[in-house]
Image 1 (cartoon, rainbow, N blue to C red):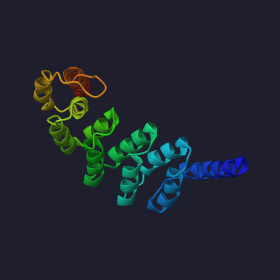
Image 2: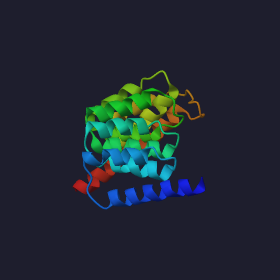
Image 3: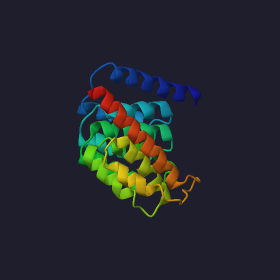
Image 4: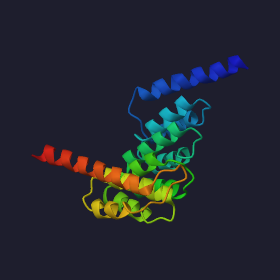
Length: 194
């Protein structure tokens, strides 16, 4: 049994090294799917990261599945890859995962959505009005990360939201932190443009 597992692991390492050594395209998706199905989380993490360099609907669909991996690091890598691929289907997959409200702390989903420009901003603004305190809490964090000046009035209004999340975080605290993040991003952008 041990020999079989080691053989599988060695074969996966060789495949990963080969994929990492070159530019990937859609023809590599089957090999990445094999890595994504490995019991070892490192292979699943790297497969999710590498899928982000393969532009295509099939890559988006497999990354959407990886958002539900039992290992949060795989889910985070999948969210980051979806944000690098952009596109409406990638944003919709992130929206679904975030809206499902099953993840206790979906900060990485909010951060990925924040990278989608105006469409991501509009989505986070909508989640800021959710019935779920957890979604409002992380939507605030995402809004701050957008750097979009129109987030300020939304976040200012959220400062009065004292409802607590499942893990005990207060929405108002998240809004205050998001305002600080927003101001920092705007200050950095202003310094760069000067």
